[in-house]
Length: 213
Image 1 (cartoon, rainbow, N blue to C red):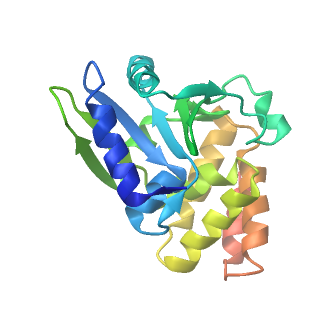
Image 2: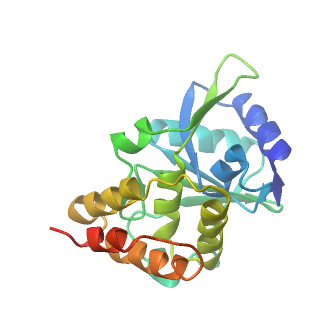
């Protein structure tokens, strides 16, 4: 498990090895630690809007001894067959899941990048590693499409700790993605919401809006 302090130290260390300024976006458990929703995570989930930034980041973690690994043991079989899969790297019990421009079929569009919650800059040499933390709504949405039990547990943690979730934003994102990228986005989100409504209160109008034309 990676603790918050470990994550901070690791990002600072990586910034020593990047050969240019790099921008990435944290989601998943990584982002949840920045929010204070959890204190540790098994993997560091990062999104890159730029292929060159992703490659520069990979070069840096390769220097630190991270090795490429298969995603078969981590994601459900259907996702392992997707065209746009993450590159995964491990060292000991640490793991990076790196996505570029897409999270499987979901498009990492400008609106998501603009909704970031916080920015953290790490500079240990002449170059800076900038980590933008995605909004809690985008974290919930992205976790709803992975079909992993641990991701549902994380969503549940967020909604139980934070009553101020903009479900309209999440639903609008699913509707947009279903039209332009991920055809399963609405169904995946509905499945998550159906499970959540047995534990927390969700308005009926949210479900009605999912499929409204």
